[in-house]
Image (cartoon, rainbow over all chains, first blue to last red; front, side, top):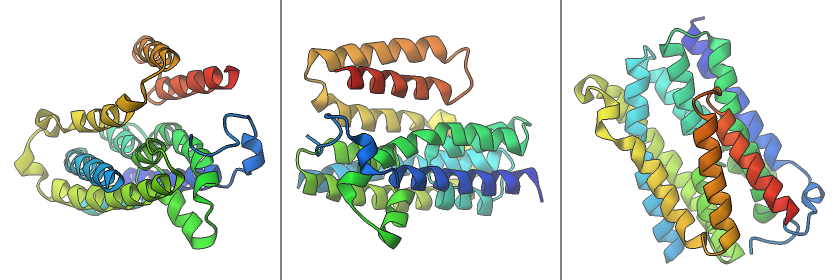
Length: 40
Length: 213
């Protein structure tokens, strides 16, 4: 497998993993007063 | 109406920058298929440019993946911020994660009401995804005809779109001070640190100040 293919697959898998993990952080972890509410 | 307008204008502006990515990828010896897969699957502009830049400069795949991942860590922070607002599960959460990028988060957080924020997130995320991928394909196909993609000045489109989103929120003195501090910090760090660390340092600075207040 070429360098390009390894880079494409590796970068894609890790990019999605980071996005998904971030979206699964429990809301209680963001319980600071500024973060526990809604947007404004 | 303004959500639709914001989402569309950001989507088309940022999406058009995909031409530069497609052309840059092919110029750096990636195939058209590889360029398109990066846009479809990685879908994070800075990370994509890092991959083709590092490999194009003769770097290894591990270096390219590490740099790309470092740049992509900010998307995890965006996901943390957006999840309590979106409140989605299952396949919708999986889809939302994929379109969690600078632009979708930026448009969502620029809205005054939660419904508008959710609409802004989905409209911008899906809009950028469609335009970014279409323009990546066009850029990759037309790479030779385009010449040097940097000469087109498309790299200015993304910061300009962000400045437009950010500007109405710069009302309080402390946000101006934070912006100035972030500019100074990024200017100081950029020449000496690997790509990705300056932007993460600015994010940490903003979180630290926000937490303290």
